[in-house]
Image 1 (cartoon, rainbow, N blue to C red):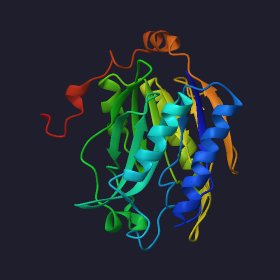
Image 2: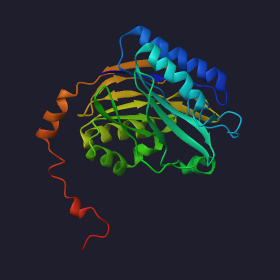
Image 3: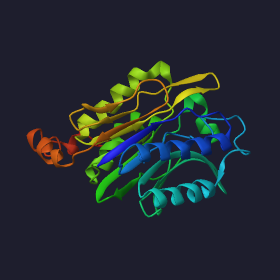
Length: 265
């Protein structure tokens, strides 16, 4: 499976520019080479995140679904459409959408762990469900940014059969080392492929650090970006997973009876 990450530089609050630029970059990625999946970063429609969400948030994903459903169908490519600032009846959500080659929405995910140090929990509502889906017959999962700091979330999805995890982010440059370490650790400990798509540029006073990557189950980089806008491509060979999990069988050797907080002492 050939996967491209679009490490996009977006403009804070400039929805028209961001939609046009995201579509332009998706087209550029597909024109460059034959791809199976294209990935966008977190809240690419608004940046992370304007003080006033109401004027720029999507309305129940209507615009992103119209534009990227048609684009996926036209280009015959799966699109992991990052996440967007999204307005529903209940409030604002940080929502990710995934489109298959036919333009069908195969996954919709509201970010479950909101980044309290930035006040994200005051601007957005949290989600209550994990995200699993299938692309081209492969079992996939999706998380958004801060979610990657919660290994229980990713382990749960792995135990449910996920072999490929997409992590979309707007992660700050000053904590790039954390992001790189966490992404490789999640890939290694779960013996899965992990595709990290971060953004670059400045959102308010925060500079996003890039360093998007396609990582194999050994934690090795199949593709790695720097700190500028660019498109990177890596290829995941799923045939290696069985051998890796057989050679170091962490799933067989788990002791879940010891992990429950209410276990007998």
